[in-house]
Length: 172
Image (cartoon, rainbow, N blue to C red):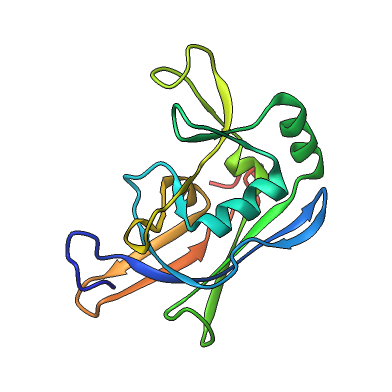
């Protein structure tokens, strides 16, 4: 937990690794960083060197008019066919100690932006460049693939992988 009550949920992001990409397995976070966890923010805000690694691995291009990272149809299809996984390792510190790894499929980042950004639906990758460490944020996309609970009395938060097992079973 962060001492700043305006953004209390903060956790160490120790590693981000992409597995099964078209260029193999790639480390996307050069060094651990503390990130705020905020469901009101739609994107994940990362340091420039991490964004550069995402761009090199997944092929989005930066649109300076909107600040979004766009994915053309060819690159999108190539990424969807490869179906890589992003593994985010979290801990109480920037390195070492107990960690929790959350695995996100590439499809979790296969988004489209429309109005007011674009007239037509446009593929984009939901990352942004953070200009300083106060902007490092894990945004709402993460909450569709992970559970976050906060124990305010003990100043503790827990992150866990969502489970979509047996969704087709008709057990009530």
